[in-house]
Amino acid sequence: MRTIWIDGDGCPKGAVRSTLQEGERRGIKVVLVTNIHHETQAEHRLVVDGSAQAVDLAIANRMQKGDVVITQDIGLSALVLSRQGYALSVTGQEYTSDDMGLILELREAAAKHRRGGGRTKGPKKRTVQDDERFLHRLRELLDRLEATTENG
Image (tube, rainbow, N blue to C red):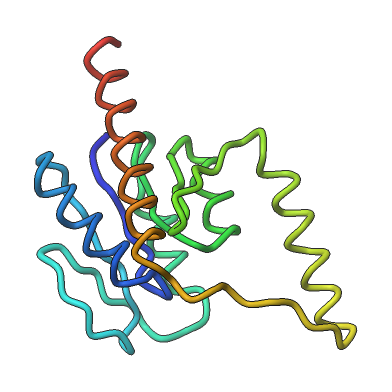
């Protein structure tokens, strides 16, 4: 693995902080990608324009095979997987190619429901336990990738 990319659009501060610290601890480059409307700072930060998918496209166009992307965007996750990267949600769920078809179907069904005037629940307020679970899953993923690199 060469780089961890953080989708700074809507990524909770706790997940950003944990990822930056874990990357530094392991000597892995972490790039925080934000649009011009976010003030978050990081050693490696890429700022893009404020258009709707600018952050997602910047990551998708720059990430390499084996990179890790932290995002809550399902569409970006699908792109990452198609480029042989690893996608981890801000809740700590690792997206896999096996799950992506169903996840995309559920996303489309929810969007269709909203277009028809229906309402869907937003995310719950983030807790300390959410941040701890995310960090635990991030470490598990990075440990697995480091072991694969060492053995393969």
